[in-house]
Image (cartoon, rainbow, N blue to C red; front, side, top):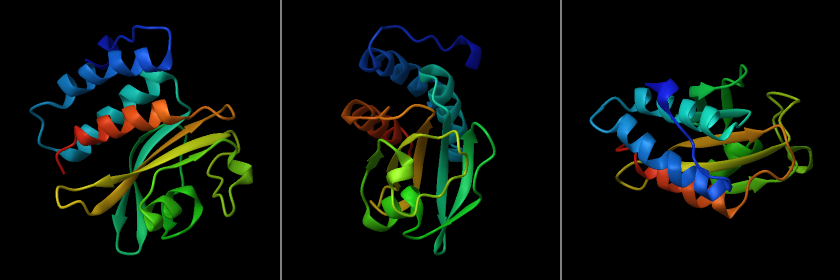
Length: 158
């Protein structure tokens, strides 16, 4: 159960290392990807105390809000717009230390200060969405987050 997720460790890396086996057990055997994305969001939000965690899924030429945890969010993001749309368009992970300094940032919440966005791929290696993680603090995300969030996304069988 969600309330049974326990995070051990002091460093961010240790917390991810503690969380990944729990996420694996949580989604293992569940074929519904929306349910798995929802549980991943909850585990990341509460396990690592992020401000907002969510998936945006490709629908035509837009990203459409999928499962998330946190305050209400933008529903649709155009290709190349904001951090999520830019990550999708450029097929790259983007880490932003100060979202106000990112050209064209879409402010779904003024409380968000830093962000990491990772492309989400299907088994054909096509981008089908992005994982967006926001923090209320500046410069929260780094290569540790990138490494472990990529591992978590690879747990999804899309």
